[in-house]
Image (cartoon, rainbow, N blue to C red; front, side, top):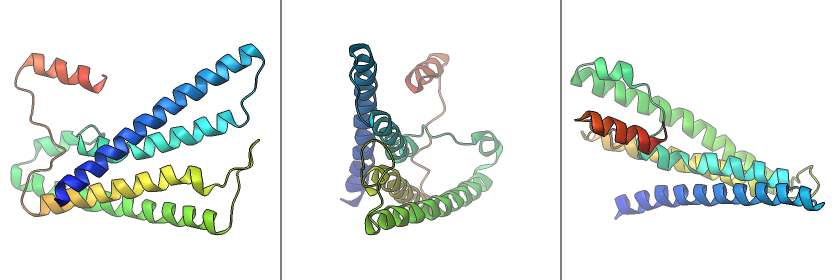
Length: 181
């Protein structure tokens, strides 16, 4: 049950990142068409920038779990299985520590913005905690994903983000096409 809840959380964050991508598209189209029609969308650039930050950070956990986050596999692929497992655990511990550090301070910053009623400096006064939620919640979900993966690997399982090596040249091409390379 916990496994399906965590996978659902990562998937939901990925879908939410997709919604913010759509919001960016719609805002940019409205801004472009508005300029041609002589209409201005107040703080449209601010909302697009905040949506871009939310999209990037909310999509991190889903990207990590899908095995699409950039990793340095060249060294790991050359190690024997015993050494590889230890380095993999070390990398997950370091990654989890760094992400936890950033997530803690991002959530703290968002809480402080709410507590002090910080407002944006743009054309529209927007409480800063609202656009900061995408950044801080995205980092918190990524921290959960790192801890989840670390617990999974520590219990003796292979990392879930690793994909099996391609068996055929066609599979290499298919994977490159799927990942957008």
